[in-house]
Length: 149
Image 1 (cartoon, rainbow, N blue to C red):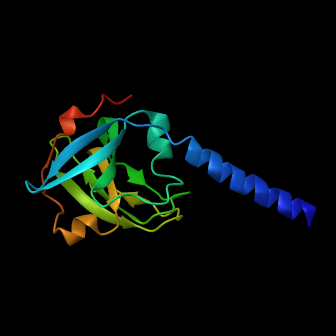
Image 2: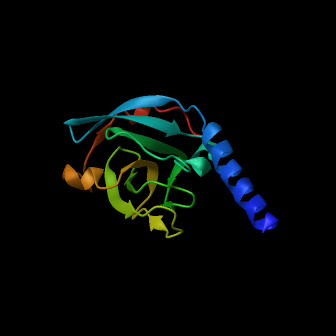
């Protein structure tokens, strides 16, 4: 019984530590579809891209996280340790959405780009669908993102 309690305490402490250590990422404003404006945290280094939105409990409606990759490639996302439902848009180097995928929290399902993506943009689940934004939609402001490593 003591071991079980100790494991529970260690688990809760690791979650609290992860939340406290959430990196302060740079933010940029993006225009989507010529109508919508969002503020996105930018994950442009490998450790920030690996952490993503893990352990976050909420995200405001017009906020998201932009993942910037060194080169366009077919990439994928998963939801390990991610507590909120998300939608991800895979975006090519010209700023055009390739595809949008819906992701359930705390799953290991792979959600893949259907082409070479230079960026991925995570928003709250249904954000793109609610606004009728999908493949072919232009995203402006990506050039303001920090250079990826």
